[in-house]
Image (tube, rainbow, N blue to C red):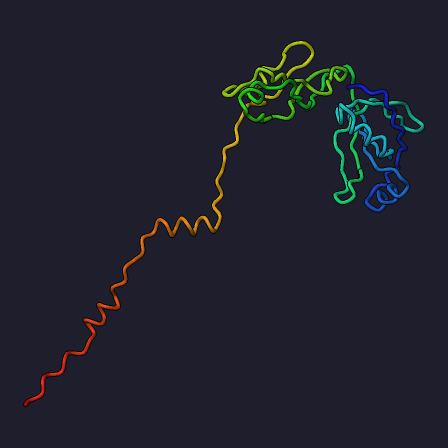
Length: 232
């Protein structure tokens, strides 16, 4: 999906690369980035993280094609292909940008969006299980959709919607295997969890008491023989 967003970038010199320099860049409120592709040399730049975050959170997300305006240079169509977040603060740390040739097809992963209320959920009391969240497609950059709708309104128990069931033809070529399942209706099986009290009660009811005869047997077998009667 093409956006009107224009991201201004400032080019970095080769000497300005490295972890220490990246930290200094972030202190200024910008983040380091690398631009590559289209059979051109890769260049290191800095960009505004707020603009990049806005693009990543848009409907088309990282599939958004936008203009990168490099200082002292021209505009280039680019796409975000990789990004790194701070695991603690969740701030953007670094991004990779790929130059896009608008005349050549490109491979991208597009999200799947389920639409409609399934008959299996509404009438049969089942639960919708979405197995596949995105599909890989090939198309021209200008034809990249923000998402692909999947109609599940007629889905019932025993049926599976697959990639082959998506609208084919036209400008999109599906690369994900046709037999890949997208969604089906499932049910929740009740699981009885035995508590310690229940286990103890069940054990007492099912186990017959054992009659202990050992003590008596020992008395009979271990008793001293009776003393012989005294002579009169």
